[in-house]
Image (tube, rainbow, N blue to C red; front, side, top):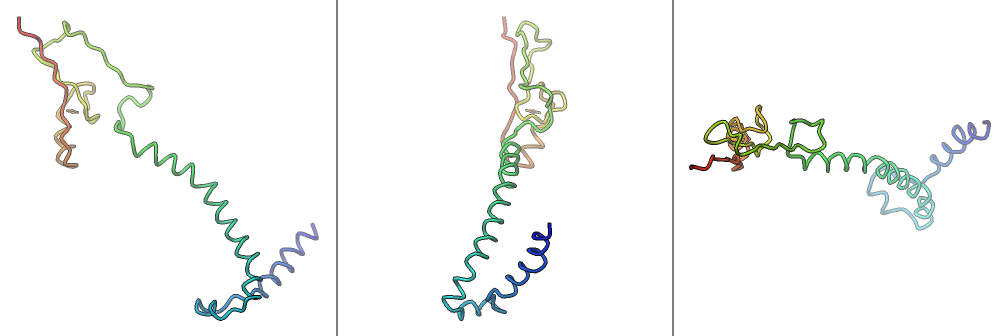
Length: 136
Ligand code: FES
């Protein structure tokens, strides 16, 4: 433990203190070749730490973003793996039934007109699927 303590409290500060880091950005143009060479281990280590941190954190964030940005169903029956509804045409209670395709209806799977507000807000042109009873 003494070696770690010595490394953190003595060696590392001495190493950093002796790095030829200029006071301003233009000072980098005045560094000699040997000063640039002495910066390589420090820049390499810092770059690796940044790269490793981004590599460790970015994939879960990118995966979450990819999954949520392509979702079209914001909140309907999210506990189901796939939302599927069946209706026998003979069971139609009225002359026609409108089925929601915008996933905004409070009466899903039936259309309640919520697509109009969605279309006004987004400039989209979504409408329902309308099933009509065939005239006899
Ligand atoms: S409410 Fe969704 S299509 Fe009408």
